[in-house]
Image (cartoon, rainbow, N blue to C red; front, side, top):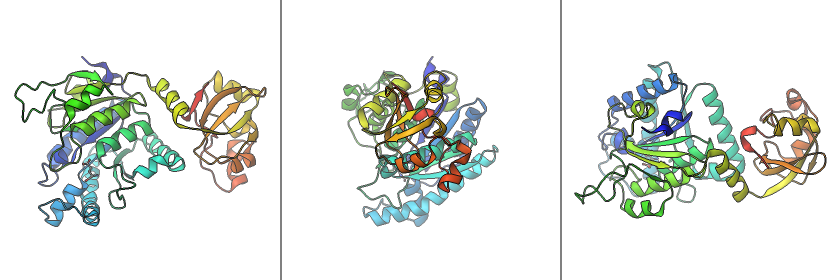
Length: 372
Ligand code: GLU
């Protein structure tokens, strides 16, 4: 029995191109319907699910009658533009049969590297989940050139997992999981049932490249698991062709390979905030706000802030200090220092009157806040 999936509240499920397009033969509607049906069941069990689906380029090639994957970037982008339509249309119609609303999210690496866009993507995804909508995510292949692209959807799945702090990343592929050697070449290869994400030995055994249809081989999956583990998420690599794979995982069955995250989500997030981000400024909080943050684990609202020190942009890290100057928390701020100065001591429902717009009611959402 495996408890990781059973306990998981928020899941990112990634489906690879060769599964979605039936080895490049065109969208496999029967398979799509099966995964969608299982995701609908998971939603009924109270899980939040985000789907990362590949297949735009493969489906585009099929629709355009191209037998070989092009090398020219503009041709790949054109194929993706054609195929993404089919992909989204298919998911939408299958989810609609279960009464579920879908949304299309196309991201590039830049959207996650830039602090402002990172926060924007994060709050949009959270809003969609709160609305009960299923986000269907792919790389924005049509505009993604080499410099700004993530490159493969295993990595994209891991970045999304980090972005919204999912508990588990499930990578559905056309193989049973990670093997000790390439099962196509070595008859003695055995399935790795469980290992620690980030174990360097995994990268050695995952070595080789992927299929001709999709981009990610086992190596990208192993590296994706390592990345997902940074925000405390476990990764499961399993065959998407396995009958009722998601439901069986949800019932605790061991299927495929489980790559465990060694650290807990919260500890991982603290580490990430501490490691990766420079503090740009400070907010000085009144005693009520200190209490709300520290004792009640609430978000920081502008009404509780009476002074802003330093210059910062939306999405940068600021310290939150009590009236005595001691830093009690650190977090990603929703408003720039200029905006923050205009809305300090202001109730959230008056932000719009002061700024002319409102991004979020909080200055720092509690999920983006780490107590020191
Ligand atoms: N974003 C690409 C597509 O949808 C796939 C990338 C991948 O297979 O990893 O066609």
